[in-house]
Length: 290
Image (cartoon, rainbow, N blue to C red; front, side):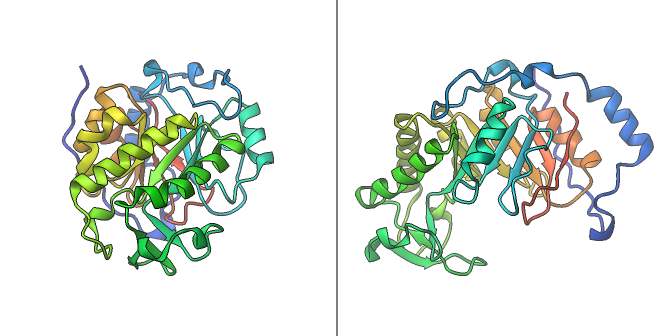
């Protein structure tokens, strides 16, 4: 039976000391309780490039992962799963990672577009909505217009597959929660996200859901894994249990706090957790595995 701990809010650390090791006494106790060898996660992928990534249920809470969207990809990071930008990442980098048996996930923004995207002009004016707060040059898309969006998003997925990715993480899949410029409802978003999961499978990619916690209970059967940001700080980790209880990976990141504090919560839930800088460069500090 999975332990469901009470979420704890991590105590913040000043930026100048955030990369220190954990407190010695607590760290040794946590390590003694949680860390065990995990050779199974190092098994090489036997499917060819472009085939969907397998997620064995027995390893659901034992993945080590990396999320890097800025800077040259560090292929030496000790992780089993790499979540990367499909445009910036080169085929040489994905080939190097696959040669080591790493699982590759591309992040695709499905509910927004940026003016710098190479396919921006393919979105009709009618589907372009309000500006995304805090992201200059980005705007929401009208996810009700499936016929207009599907061809562009399908090509984004094909780019992932062509570079050797076997899975796709759908980001910005919660436009209905924002002032998007369109009267989007919960059901509009639900239908769109399910269509995207189906499209990914048609193109031989394993679909994953980024955030959108309000719809996790409804969408967990349609997706193979989840990616979450700051569920400990926001006290929302329990909402991800439909994935964990179905033995599907939950890849979780916190941007503040000491891993010694938040790992107790997330490892208990069965999540694969790391500490990252918000820039999502190569640096990471992983939680110990159970």
